[in-house]
Image 1 (cartoon, rainbow, N blue to C red):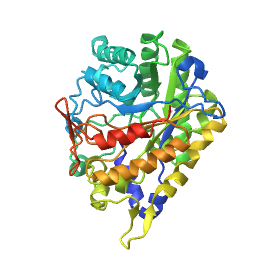
Image 2 (tube, rainbow, N blue to C red; image 1 turned 135 degrees about the vertical axis):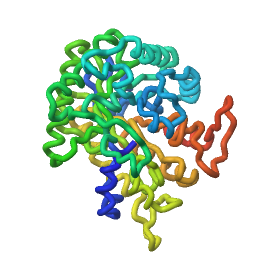
Image 3 (spheres, rainbow, N blue to C red; image 1 turned 90 degrees about the vertical axis):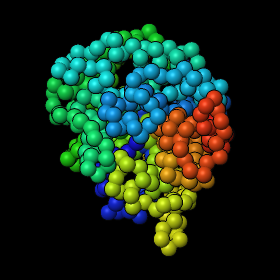
Length: 401
């Protein structure tokens, strides 16, 4: 997912943004890899990155119905056991749950959590343990922070209730933000980090401030949350998305040793044509896009080499003993299948050069391998679902043990 205002800003510098846009990375492990379930380096290979390969699951993504119409999920927390069974059978081992805190939090008192509505999260953690799939729970929408807060319904067609305060500037909202993680840390203490990790907030970005101020403020908020989690459960594995919509490693958090996670939708002309949540910019992307991406004169402006250059900052965390992971990526279903396969082939090669794991935004749905609704795709019937077998096989071929 990507923020609409971020893309509007990019429009004015179209060509330069294509060359410079970067897949967001975030987070590094808070613990010794042997204690957290992080893959151990092979002889002669220096890698501390978790070998996580998988998908985002959206059953608790949003309480705004207009959002959920874009994905084949009900927003009811009823995660499907079949998803976990199939992921395991196909060799995947990681599921991120981007969630909306309002689904279990009292709107009148943000420090009050409805226990009954947390039970679906309990259940999905158990499903992950049953099928050997690591669960990464993420506050996609947190008190005072929601990357789509600036989306304009009259343009995007997505009606939503914005956050009323900011976690970056309001002390009570920060208390509520930290309380969410202290609560989860206490509730899930004892579940090993090989099975469960915490992703602090989706795609952090403070609005209406300069870059350095926003980055500093995010690092402050992240540290406060990390301290609260470790105060309850010192062994919990923690992940932080990169700053600037998951694109920029957060050097200010290197000393905490949390995993840093990147989100790769680079370039967006290929990954987000006609995606409603990034309108009006996405309406002006070329249809159909190509990969490598060419301008109107037929000149290549984005390819494997530009992706490699854009991803190069994500080699830096390893120098500080900080693991990385690519927690989101993919192409919306208006991108033709042959372009999707070519983009993934190059993108995953670049990610593998960094010895990082990776995940798609969807398992089922417009970015996924099941029921993507992508025109011209040769689907295989899979238990009543439409399986993009070519994409599945490509993904499987790019996994590194």
